[in-house]
Length: 342
Image 1 (cartoon, rainbow, N blue to C red):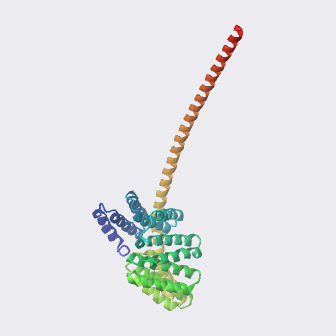
Image 2 (tube, rainbow, N blue to C red):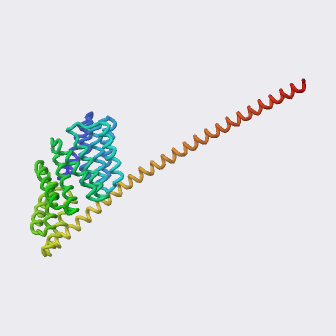
Image 3 (cartoon, one colour):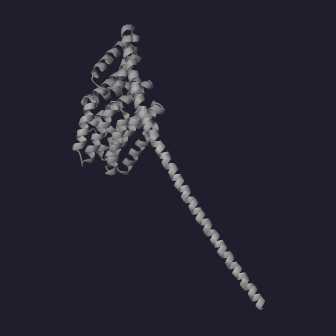
């Protein structure tokens, strides 16, 4: 529902949050659905508003499993915005909580989620060679206990990312195997978006091998599959690939149509992301400004207190010196008086 109708998902999750009063996990889950819905809508300020509220509830009630889940989600959202430092900050927090409070076997997949996002950050910053070990380790974690829809979905997404990385480094056979395996897991839970992503990946391999017509057939199929899915980024990816493949086979009419659609969608996405990123950046700047002001206040109080203490110490030392001099003077008087008597 989140991808097909994020507005309805948000509405239902807000109701669920009200009904879950007193149920910490229920409230956290509802808030994450709301945050995820706003992520689909590219309203990132709302994403962090509800995700941070979920983190606060989980932390206050010492519900460590939910806290790990929320921190991993927040890290993933910052990674989507290419804010790697902030992403790693939350992912490291999630990992450290998981070390202090080990997860039960049925929830170990949350550590797999952390590995996936860390792998994607490595991909963004250093390239696929550094990302693949994290992604492959995540798959191993997920496969230990495939007990629910979430783990099947995570496996499909991670295998698609492994496929994308292998395409990037020209390991086409490994990439093809990853995409096909991803389709198996995605089909079990009818994860349309992941199936479409796998088909886009397989189409890339067909294009690289010169099989443009087969690639076009797969891409047209993928485009029809996600027609009602609210995912601009995947639509852009498919439209761009169709444009390139129609150009390769010399179909100028279709090439022009898909190029125009691709550019329109990309401009729309860029505007949405720019608006959301500006909002998030403003919030971060305000947060940093507040921290600087707090630090300045702290420095003022520390300096004031230190200065006062130093002054008191100096006064005390001067007092001792004066007292000592008086004692010395009295001793001299006594010595002089005793000398006169002699």
